[in-house]
Length: 183
Image (cartoon, rainbow, N blue to C red; front, side, top):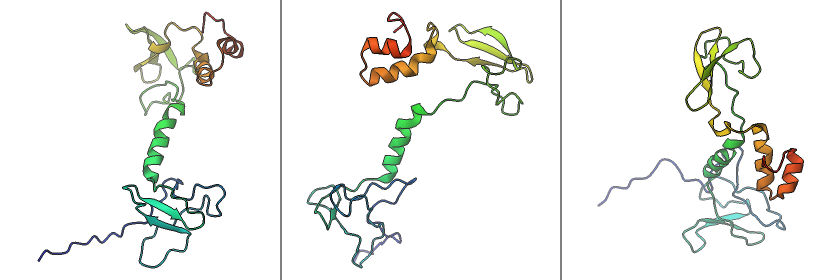
């Protein structure tokens, strides 16, 4: 006779909310249950939240809405949160370059805004600017390889946004106030 092994952790009915994200609800806008998430608890008692969790005849677990009969698939809130963070990572502004030593008083003063805190210290072979911190005497590099030959690199984000929104080239030049050769 095989010994029974049971997990002390009870499975949940739907994945738990992660960072305010819960996507397991009825997706039918005409339903009274629309946008109301299913309860996470799992137990033997009948759930009265308007949903029934089932396999739906496929390998994908689904919720069945008792009001409209829709079958939205059960999705992982953790995976959606991680994907959202991954997609939005490029939109978070990167900190302005400053002294790399966290103990230095110039650490939070960016090179571009602090003229008296740093001294220009030449360039690297790739063309990036080097700076010397006047307080701790450490040198650091401010990378600008991707925009080395660009004269108006501050317009890159605007131009890229207009390109992604399928704006015509003439309209991009007009909005960004640049010459077509620059584009």
